Every structure is written in C-alpha cells, then in structure tokens.
Amino acid sequence: MFGDFAISVLGISIAFGGAFIAASQLDIARTKLKLEFFDRRYKIYDEAANFISCVLQQEIASARIDEYWRTVQDAEFLLDKQTCAYLAELRDNANALHANESELRATKDKDQRVLLLGKIETRRKWFMVQPQKLRYRFIPYLGFERVGWSRFFR
Image (cartoon, rainbow, N blue to C red; front, top):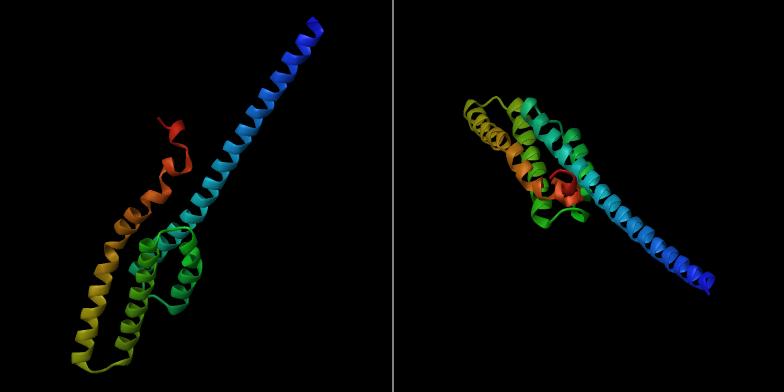
C-alpha cells in the first residue's frame, strides 16, 4: 500500500517537474526570440546612426547610400510604418544632398552655386539633429524591458 502511494507521489512529482521544465524552456525560447528581434533592430539602428555620421563627416557617395538602404530594407518586418518612413526619409535626404553636391561641382554659374550651397547647408543642418531623432525613434524597440531583461536591472 505504501509502495503504491510512493509510486503515485513520484509520478505526480515527475509530471510537475516535466511541466516546470517545459515552462522554463518556453520562457527561454521567448526570451531568445526577443533577443533575436533586439539584435536585428539594433543592426538597423547602428547602420542608420553610422550613415548619419558618414553624411555629416564627408561628402556622401551614392554607393554608401545604396549600402545603407540594403542594410535597413528589412525594417518593415521589424519596425512600425513611421520608423520605416523615417529611415526612407534619411535615404531621400542623403540622395538629395548627394545630387546638390554633384551639381555644385559641375556648375560654374555663381548664382547657381550660391543657391546650391544654401540647399546643401540646409540639408546638413537637417542631418545634424538626426542622431537625437533616431535615438528617440528606436527607444521603444531597444529598451531592456522589450527584451525582458528589466527584471535583472531593478
């Protein structure tokens, strides 16, 4: 009789242990998925930040703009529409800046050069405030609470 009871208790204990292990594995899988999303979103953020820095430091080449766009193109699967539109706006402004700089090199007309220099200055000023705007856009995606790590940093 005691043996039957012990076997029943052991069976229930094993079942609870299995359920605990399964729940733990589910939690680990969810955290791993969140971490993967975090890594992919951070890659997009890092590329956009480097792109802005590159635009601010030097004349931007069309190859660099293309490289940026290839890297951030998958954002539509990971970010909201407004953030994706913002990333496209960065590209569009860089393309316009590149076109203005190319046109400036090609033109000799003084009035046209003054006009182009004004456009270039306006675009560069726009890019100067973009690092803060980029950070603001990505805070909801890159915070610790998004990954589930906030419980470790209380």
